[in-house]
Amino acid sequence: MRIPTIIVATDGAPSAEATVRWAALEAARRDMRLTVVHVLDWDWNTARYDFGGGHFETAREIAETVTATAASTARAIAPTVDVAELTMTGSPAAQLLGAAEAADLLVIGSRGHGGFAGLLLGGVSQRVATHAPCPVVVVRGRADATDGPVAVGVDDSESADRVLATAFAAADARATGLVAIRTYMPAVPVYYRADIPTTTIATPEQDAAERARLTEQLAPWRVKYSSVPVETIVSHDSAAGVLVGVSHGARLVVVGSRGHGVIVGTLLGSTGLQLLHHADCPVYVDRPGKDHR
Image 1 (tube, helix red, strand yellow):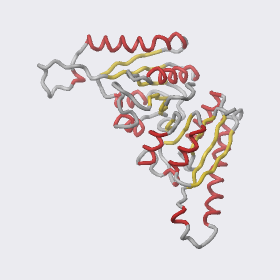
Image 2: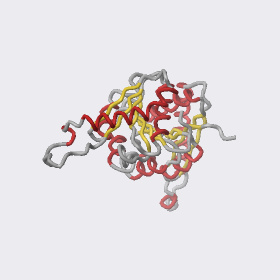
Image 3: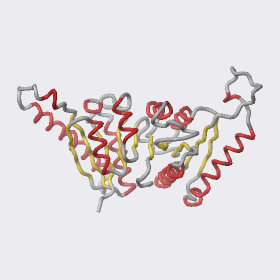
Image 4: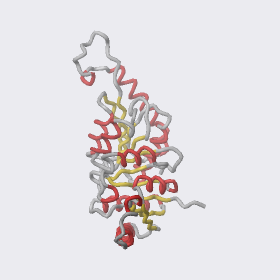
């Protein structure tokens, strides 16, 4: 029987310690195993021309030390968690995606050095964020924040209920509130000038309709998680802008991996990329087929 597992990637940089701490606490909250992974970024095609000898063995020993150090940190933070260690060799993105096949959650940092250089700034980040077969948490900003609500972006996609399940469960586990955010572009009468920003146009009837739809979406989850206080925000601003703004007072932002309507293109376009670059707290990217805790 498969053991529920969280995988956390570490590169040994000082900033990676916050990522490991976050993952260890999450594993304790969920009563899951934690596997600490470090990928030795080793190009075999290039390395075969290195006839000096011993370089790979040395690099491997250093990599294993990085893994062991991070695992030690995790055990100190969450002594009740079963912590495993895994040191891998090859392309960081490919190895992480492969390891994630056996994970319920993959936790990565927002920046890295060595094996994770450029993570979330280039192709590696996009590949991991868009193709991981499980939910992904990007630990960034105020990684150790212990106050503030959980924020969630809500749209009309088929995944909206799954994202809400994740967000409510996260808020409940942290004994905190939830901020549910819905953004939309109002239908503007044809007589408005094109140079007037739609965000400044008063559309009370449309706003009321959107708020009613959001209230309806939240209703069953409010019943299930009756102890979780809920605040709602309906805005004409961009989803990325509102989510990033709210992240400055939140401890976690939850979004879907794909969206239609409100958060269209999340993690595939500008909204997701802006959030992953600029959020001031960890970002939880939900995906289907996994635990919603």
